[in-house]
Figure 1 (cartoon, rainbow, N blue to C red):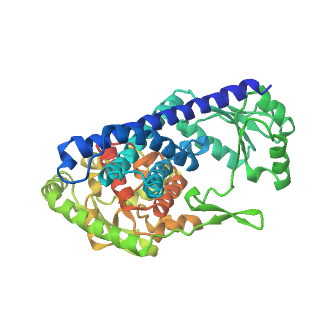
Figure 2: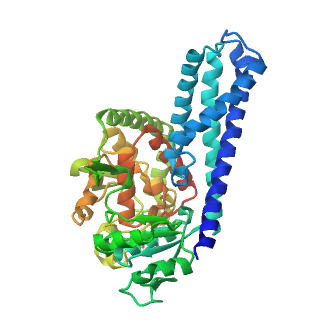
Figure 3: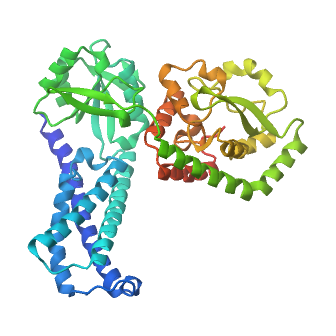
Length: 482
């Protein structure tokens, strides 16, 4: 009874894998041809590098050999393995790595079989072109797949075995992320009545004792086992009962507080163990980040100074009180510092916080409400476009904040933190961060912390620049701000 599921599931994957393969072949051929033109036929490089130009025929024949070689290297780097095909930025890293390995293999083969010297300029431009062309093509194909998934096409029918809190959290994340490629069909759990909705429109479709039959009848393609819902032995038996079926079988870790980027699998005497890396930035990364912060914040203050003066005058003329609002925030390693913002509330607004706490619309240890009565008319505009945050450039210059990093909390929030939340205080807080460009006020507190930790673990200067550019776009469209 699995024939329909097997054929549709595998056929879709084989089709897209084949499309990626053909795309790579075409991009490689185009990259080599473009490199030949750039090196020998254009004035850009041919006038700068004096190398003997072999015939076009020689390079054409060479490409017939090089493209299959590079495709073979791509294969060994799992670039045609469906489970790694849409692997985020890691896929692009593997493309560049595979292209680099291929380049060295070509040079080595050239020495071994003593083929005529291939122009170094051509090889260099071919390596760059290959990396760029293949990455861009794969990026566009991925966008096409994501768009199909958003429309409900090319989704894998999914059930979650285990309807406890962890199972519900997994289902909620799947529902919020259509590009994941998973379509929730229901839960399997004997502790619930069949038909009962664990989440809206997501019912329990049966018990674990009926697992095989349920998967067959519902044409299920992906099964997620919730590790915290069953004993170890029960999960092992259920997974073994599905051996040989054309399914993707996934097992939750039960460790939502630990991010995937920190987890490694280690084998000790044939026993698989989960390793967890510590959260930290290296000393060289901290120095690089600080230099970048100093240069950008100083230039930004110089360029924006006339605008900041105008905003200050408008605030002063439209409501009583100081222009700059100063509050205590918790910085790196729990140290307090003075946090600067343009004042967006009426004077004495802090005293009304206790009266408004029952109206809090944010989840977790933060306070946010839409249509806050304490905000001035000018303040609403400043907040909408995050103009009120600009004085924090002074905090960045002083070293109390960074341009990018976790947002600095107030002391009363930190008191309520769980232990894993405190990890976000291991680094200098920032004016903007990953969660601000990934949902802003619509995210829960735990989601914000996970994104902060992901940023810390995966920091790079390029990542900071990417977040800053995304921040500009988010601010201009006032996405999720209140």
